[in-house]
Image 1 (tube, rainbow, N blue to C red):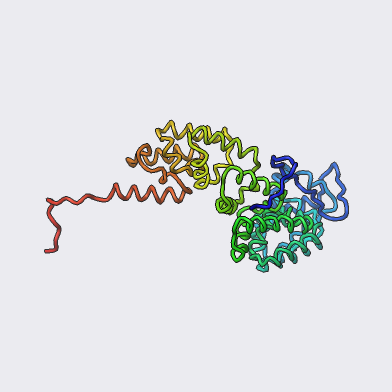
Image 2 (cartoon, rainbow, N blue to C red):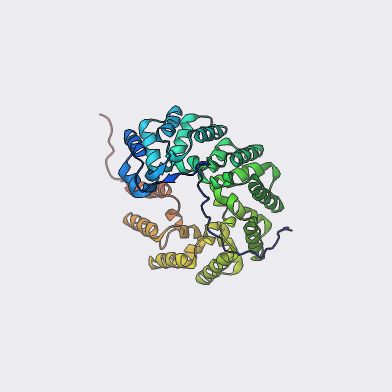
Length: 376
């Protein structure tokens, strides 16, 4: 029996608000004129000044700034000139960070990513994650230690720091509460303790933002799905699905989606559960999106029984579905009578399936009366 606690909190997921970017303890002085030293330093580093002015011109009015010093730290890490220029044009706020704090930041990140070349690549891809948390070193250090105590892979921790830096900027107790809630729910749903670390790593890797969700959301979503007739084993399967979707939704949205899907497909509640287990992502989509996709499939001559047999086709946009149907039609494949499985998957998956159809049609037929070619 699940020991899930009800709550009176709002069921709708609230959008996350950005945390204040405190680049250092002192306050930058803003001027109506650009800081010429910053502009000159950025020119010397081959940074696209016009792009900076257009997107984040306010940075050029701040004083003091540490353009050359920050660039030197990146250079010491092995970053080339073009890489430094790309980092600063995307995240010029980096020049407002105290160089000493940037060096401390580098030391912290290297505890989970000791390869400086890899770290430079991460900074190039997620510069805001590296430079915007220089005033949260204590929280970062405590959170790194906590995730390391869970014996999580260093790459997973690095991905969390890069993708969801807010989770490392806040007190470690908040992350501990969510991880504990996830672990308890996993065990109560029949999960194997020996596999829990792998399950948690996969969940955090696929959805780093799960840590930022209120624990009550997870509890209420599981309670809602249980009340809809899903067994504990089925709930464990759904909870283990991609992106840990049970923390991204709320009972109200799922109720509307389930009702619309059941009405449109004309199925029973038991049949609907089977469809959801085949395609958990179905719970994500609002009625308007599902209505558009159902209508597009039906207008192509696809029956509702085909859709219920292969509901994952609803994960594809109408544009992708229409394009793939036309490609198959050109090869003589009729989706109205064949399996929809060939439509599914990524672009690469479809190309493989399409290639097999192409190969079957282009293979020369054996002519039993044609003369055989033999060597003289």
